[in-house]
Image 1 (cartoon, rainbow, N blue to C red):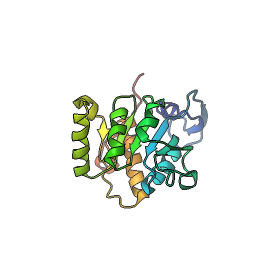
Image 2: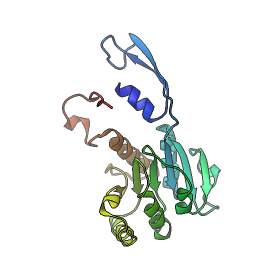
Image 3: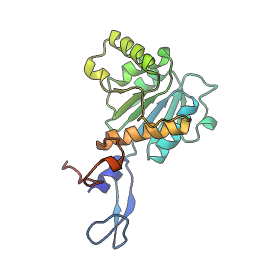
Image 4: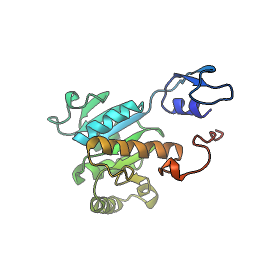
Length: 210
């Protein structure tokens, strides 16, 4: 059940192998899990090196990745081979005209108030599984104040993951992308983000009833 829910969340189908009592990584039983759902979307805003790394890992995780930036010199398919599409448009205008749902992931890497404040104002008022924004703690405080002035409620502001990612000590764009992906996965399935050596009990707990 847990594996089926995982495939369904990604709109994916796959063969899974189990032991006689449901053990993973054994080959006594092979099941075909088929999902009838489109893959979830990952919207990455800001055509920077970090965005390229986030787009690559988003595709690896099964997301349909879109990269959007208002600057055509940076927003090119050649720079973002991990994205399904690259869009040249003002981020908030693009988001306003595109659909999102409860599985959509939104990563705001623009790191510029003129882009990220109107974008987040739009994002925090629509359905999404994850809304994260890059920046220092000072940037976060200033951004939050601007969003509050724009009329967003405390409940809406509480949805923002900023600075985005888990504390892995990341330095390179690829390491930052791993920290962002880890936070997205933990948030999706209710993970704690702490090392497994510091936890007890089943590593893969039974899935909750729908």
